[in-house]
Length: 131
Image (cartoon, rainbow, N blue to C red):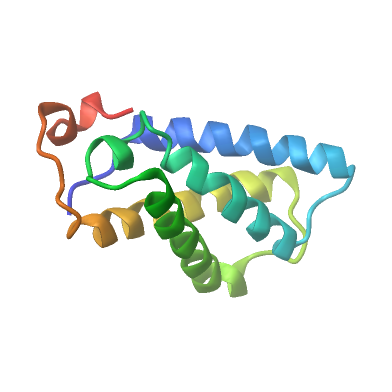
């Protein structure tokens, strides 16, 4: 399997961390595990499936289909790791588990989409050019 680009993951994690931090601040409390997973299910697909991101640029998949695949991947990854997650998420927990879940979702999406006519442009082959 092709190794994921650290730039792509960093951008996704920063975006997700900002969005989830804003949501937690708005709630004025640390989110529960269930709430945090729900936020990840709502936010992460939009970040990973944005038109200028790897999954939309390098696979023949439309926005809705990509989002649907990403939501399924978030739920699957969250279920896989839920027993290890804390009941309440402090900021450090959100960063740590955001990285773990984002990496899991990235790998799941890449694996699931391989059958979806991967585009073989130079930008898609060269990890350093992925955004």
